[in-house]
Image (cartoon, rainbow, N blue to C red; front, side, top):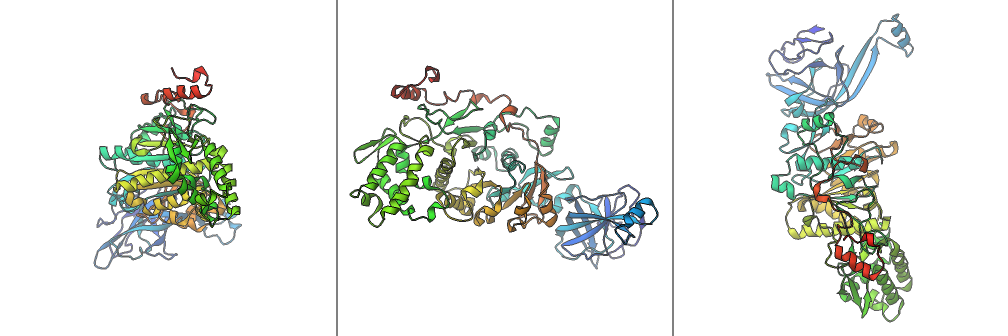
Length: 613
C-alpha cells in the first residue's frame, strides 16, 4: 500500500507497507529518521498526547513492550517526536458483524480482513509540546539512539544493566536512583519459588558492582553488601562459578557489558551449631570459608540487646515492653564483663540460660524487683515478660555465649569484612532470625551514622520483608528498617527488600523505594493499590510471568520495563558450584580459633577428630 500526502504540513510520505517487508518509513524532509515503518496512527480511536492506537501494517507485527516512535509536524514546520511503548495489542476481523461470521470468513464465503492494532503509552515527547499524533501518521519501531531516547537511557549518566527487553536489546535502570544521588532502595515482590526475587536482587548487586557505575575502582571496592540468607543454603556459593554457564550466557553478559564470573570477594557467616561447645558454624553443604557469628553475654548486656529478643510486631503493643526496656537499662548499668560472661550482684553469669535465670530470680523477689523494673509495674506484667523471656532460652542460647574466648572473632561488621557479607539464618528458628537481623542492622546503621559520610555505600538485601516490617504494629526491627528507608539514602545505606506481598509491608518503606520490581504475582495480590504503577496489561501479565521475567518501575520512565535477566554466573546451589576460590580453602572448623577448640575441650568432652590439629 503506497500512500502520498499524509498528515502534517503537507510533506509527502514515501512508505511501502503491506508487502511483507518493513520499509524505511521516513519523511522526505528527514523528520522521521531511518527506522522500519510498522503502521499508522489510528483515526477511528481518539489519539491523545499520552496515549494513542496504531494500525499495524499487513505483514508486520507489534508485541507488548515494543518501543515505537512517530512525528507530528507543527504549523511552521517544527517537528515533535512522540515515543512510546506498546502496552496492549488486539486483532479483529473487519467486515464481520456476528460472532459466527468467523466461520464463514475462514471458509472464504464472507469477505473480511484481519486488522491488528496496538495501544501505545507515550514515554517521551521532544520537544515538550504535548500535542496528539495525527491520524494516519507513520509509526516506526524504534532502535538504537531512538530507543535509548524513548526510554530515557540517553539521559542516564550512570546506568546499570538489568537484563533484556522483548526486542533482545539491553535495558537499564538509572544508578542515581539506587546509590542515593536522587533516590534509593528497591522493593521486589512476587510469589515464592517462581518470582526469582532473591535471584534478581543478587543479579542487581552483581551488575552494580561489575558495571563500574559506583565510582572508580577504589570506591567500588569499598562498597559493601550485606545479604541475609533465610531459605536454604543457595546464597552461600556466591563466590563459586556456576558450572552450567555456556556460550549463550557468556554472549548475554558480553552484550550487557559485564564480565562472566562469581562475586570475587565474599565472606560467609553462619550461627554456631546447637550444642557444639567449639562454636563451629552450622552449615551442611559448604564446608570451606565459613565463620561463626554470635554475641557474648557481656555484649548482650552492655549493648542493650534485650529488646530484640521481643522483636515480634505485636510485642511492642503490650504493657510488658516497659519491663523490657527497664531490664535492658539495668543490665547495662550493673553487668561487669568477666571473660565473655558477666558478674551481676556478685553472681557469675556464663550463658544465656544463666542470665535468664538470674533475671527471673530478681524479678520474682519483691525486694529486688523495683530495682529492675521500677515500682509502678504490676506482677502480672512482670509474669508476662518472664514467660516470653524464658521461652527464648531454646532459640537464643547458641547465639549468646559466655563459654568461648573473647578474643576470638565472632561479630559481623561489614566495614571489616569482604565486599559481600552473607549471613546465613536458615537453620535458626523465627525468634532467633528476628534477633540476628535486628541486632546486625542496628549496629551497621549506627556505624554509618557515626561515620557521617554517605560513601562507601552499604547495600542490605533482606528477604521476607513483610515479616520484619509488617504494615501493622511496631517492633525494634521495624523501627530500624524505617530508619533505613527514611534516612538511609543520606547515610549511604540502601535497602533491597523482597517480599511475597507488598500489601503487607509498611507503607513508608514502599513509598521510599525509588525502584519497584515485581515478578509473578497471584490474582488477589496484583489487584492491590501497591501495584498501581503497573498498567492493566502488565498486571495481567504478572499472573503468568515466567521465572526470570521482572517488571521494573523507576522514576525516569513512566512505563515499567519488562526485563529478562541472564542466568547467574555464580552458583545458586551446591550442585552448580565450581572450583571454590583459593581464599576459602579452609574447613569450617579451622575457620575458628584452634586454641578455642582446645579450651572448650578442657571444659567438656570434645571428640578428637573435631580438634583441628
